[in-house]
Length: 192
Image (cartoon, rainbow, N blue to C red; front, side):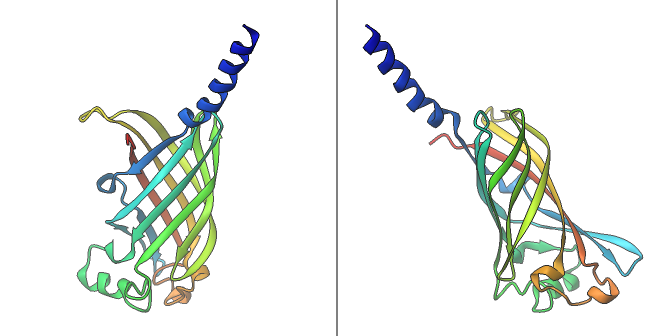
């Protein structure tokens, strides 16, 4: 009898960690990274990247997980065709040579079962640097319309573009060196 109980406990312990880990696939329609940058000291300009993909793995009980996001650099939008051409060119994102921007993290921070931060690496223009994202409004549940399980949040960080070698116009803040990133995320639980 005692042997059966021990076997049942061991089997439960083996199964529990796998069941606690959840994988979420980013919904690109509702997860478009946004940026804000000062413009010559007069205003703050905004834009976004229209194409982002990736996955998030969470084990909220163990307070662990990972994030892997890929952004299509050519999907940047400034809301001006002329400026879009400039920022896609060699002076800024050089999208022909560097078509993607990535953020990867295996160091997530939790407050209880809520994700509150991610320390990872941002790769842009072929340069990889550490970046810490602050995560707010983290919530998981059933999506209102399609009834599928999902999680959502907003991640933010401020970076200096010059650290990735994007120095054109920095001295005159055209645009500013400091760029504020805001990443709204909605991700569906992988049911496969």
